[in-house]
Image: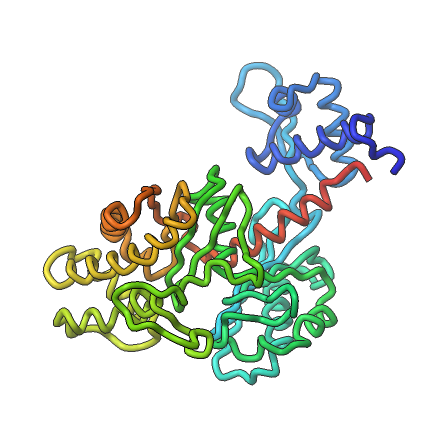
Length: 400
């Protein structure tokens, strides 16, 4: 196309524009002089660039430098309101929604409880959850540039049907994606929830700067995300990382795993295993409620009372986690393993050090283990980051 040949003035200007916009995203408000130094552009070129971006509505003047020798200088920042993106985190119990402006700042959140809802009301649930977040942000649905929805399991790219998540009622209809596309006014993408937690850690958290890592997730279910060469590895049907189904030593061999919605690793180290382990160790005050809540409370108590039966509970849990991780490490040889999800996070450093010690004995390669750093709604944050990445590419493209 005319004007888009690499090396032409328009493309070079667009590259400089994008470099400046990325610097403003990373650093916040910057002066013309600072942008020039960071990009290597001359002052006249930096001035032209900022004037161009301001005219396009992409940057705004937010104030002036203060407290420095010499005259004050104008500070420029990304115009957050130029576009918005949304994310949804779906579980059987609730849909959590959020809207962020193009800088990544969350401007609206909403949570829709869904237990007991009819399975045929999924489209209504999605639109209601999104509407709640949009309304909280003072926007309308048409203001949202893109939406990313995170669910357990994965939508098979060859059939468009959700797999590996039989516990999510209503999401298995062969026409669901078409119905959602008809009901929503923006482009919609779908991603596995654990994959989105990995996106959040890669962009903002413990895996920042790492191109090859595994994220092990433990909440209602046990799963993993695999990042190779800086990109998510999803597998042929989207099922890469469904390690809850992984056969492991120490548990009976589970057959028909998708019908059982479980497998050896899930039985050994999933949330449902913690109450059983606690009873075997003679712990009485186990509590009641959903598996993940009970398991999280038990692991948190064990991390605080790191001795006796509670220490043994933490030891057994760490061994179970390391057993499954050893198989993944043998195949993938990652440079880093991120431990994430509420159940694991509750164990903190006492659990991490135990898992690291066990993995050192069970695996030939020895990746570094770290705790996830994105603690507040990591799946939702990952959905927003994923939606924002595409939105920025589209909105920040000044070569068009």
